[in-house]
Length: 212
Image 1 (cartoon, rainbow, N blue to C red):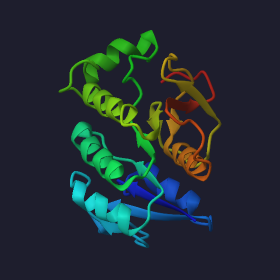
Image 2: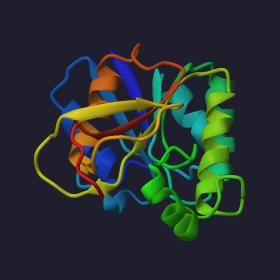
Image 3: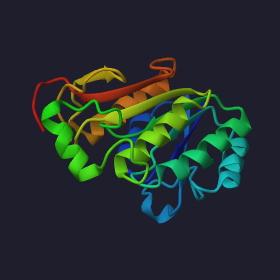
């Protein structure tokens, strides 16, 4: 049995991930949430604050967690990374899946790079959205854990799981906008086969050349 803690489990992508794992008898999911009333399925739910390292340590230890999937955001990412990473390191868990955002490595196509900077700030500015996301992702990458950072392309709604295109940290982002259910399905597959994409930061897009 693999025990998975989902931090920020009320997020749409996290809820899709949980649904995809519901029928898997080899995986037990523990949603970690601030407000349990936002969960339709409250089974195994843990109420806690993602910025409270001691609460996270207790949740990880008491439930014998093997994998931590952090679906936190979009703001105050550095603060939350400090507590999440501290709790994981204190409990000797090794595997973390971390959701970030596309654009943190200035990997967007040139046609979108300037717009991103205007709307989301410079990646070198710690006080901007992209800068905060980048610093938190760097903390994950430098943590010594077996990490996978997932950077979804432009997110959309949709009901069908799409084909996925992967680009890595040093690649320019390619592919089209991706819906949330597809990202949830991708993460569920990663939890089932956690030896994939270790020590990697990957962008997930639809396998198309559609623009966004």
